[in-house]
Amino acid sequence: CHSQPLITEAAMPAANIAPMDSQAKPHASSEPLTYWGRVRDVAAAFFPMGFIAFGGPAAHIGLFLKTFVEGERPWLDEQRFMELMSLGQAMPGPTSTQMATAMGITRAGALGGLVSFWLFDWVGFAVQLSTGAAVYYLDLGALDTYKMVVLGAGPAAISLVFLAARMLGNKACGDDPLRISLALFTCFVALLLPREHMRWAAFAFPGLILFGGLVTALDARRPSRRAAYEKALSPPTGKGLLKQIGIPRPAGLLLAMVAVGLFPFAWVARDLACGGFGGAGSRQLAVFSSLYWMGFSIYGGGQVVLPMLESEFTRGRCEPGETGSFPPLDAETFGFGLALAQSLPGPLFNLSAFLGAAVAGVGGGIVGFLGLFGPGILLIYALMPFWESLRRHEWVRCALVGMNASAVGLVFQACVTLWAKYCTNGAEAAVCILAMAMHKRFAPGDTKPLALRRAWPALVIFSCATLCLVLFFLDLNGAYGDWCHVAKYGDFATQPNRTEACPSAS
Image: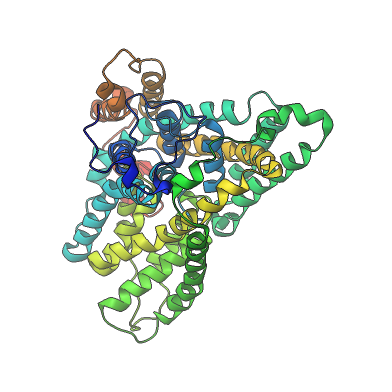
């Protein structure tokens, strides 16, 4: 139960006391009625996620679905949740962080979005920032040791991706042949995109999603297919949610103008940084401009931004002796930051804090984080007050049916690529499958304590990761061969001396 609120309903503005979406189920506990009660609810929901959100955006989406649609905090109905997923996939920036921010906004307005954004990302950001600063000031290097310690975190975490793909596929596609075809088409195209040209292929992701929306928007106009869009054609409920968001449209338009206006500034500053600015501040300007430019121009998430980050931070853009930019990192340091990001909770975009701190100190890590995340967060804030109005048009809702199906295809593509990346031997595959079973079949039911139910995902991930580490040391069946599997794990191309150190790696 909740304590007596400090601010009464009568004292709060009307924009802050609108009811939840009427399609959502009531909260399992007594509903926070005040604005500050909803802010506390956002904080209570997202604080533990900062520690357990392993596995990348697809796993994060599965965690959100289980928590905010089907779980103890059903803030959104399935339709609005799927809409947010499609919008995140079609916009630049980190999809899962944009969804987390959007859910905070829908629950507690602009402040709720900031709270959910920070609590979802802060653990990975803090570790990446402090580690990058240590590399900058102390020149530390411990890639192999760290990778050994976190050996099983990846295989255990991606189990959530497979469960999310199953749940989202059932919800977005069902047994409709057209939606299933759109999901399969998107998955196949995403898998066949050439990795060496991923920077340009990144534009295919929003293109595929928009294509799916166009197909279903036209298909819904056929009289023989109207029944397949019965739910989409029904007017949405929850009209009070726009007031609960509390962001006026002029503010949303202003945020969009800021996000778009900073892009040419970052483009120009990115080149000017190679001139004669000099000083620590110019390094930070170079970091911010480079990462904001990337954050605005990439679609498709972390797998798309990685080659751009590698090119920007390891190859350098300036001639020797030029000031005002940051020095390039060696490949081993970049690989260390990548391994760190992949083994931490939160989005891969947190790698920006490590890279910024590694080349420009603590200040560089902070502005790098803001630069890479900034465009996506500004745009999701700008879109929210308009989206609740746009979704009331039939053609928009019907287009979202196809956008949702195409977005699910990207989740299935993530299943394939993540399995190939993390499950490189029998022990890792066994740990992943065990984690799936523990999540799906052995999760505590409604009769168990609430604290246990909420902690279960973290318990599964960390216990399975520990088991994988034990199998690593036991080296069952000689699967690993020798201790060179520490260096081989992850198969990073940024380890140029791997073959010489471990002949078996070749």
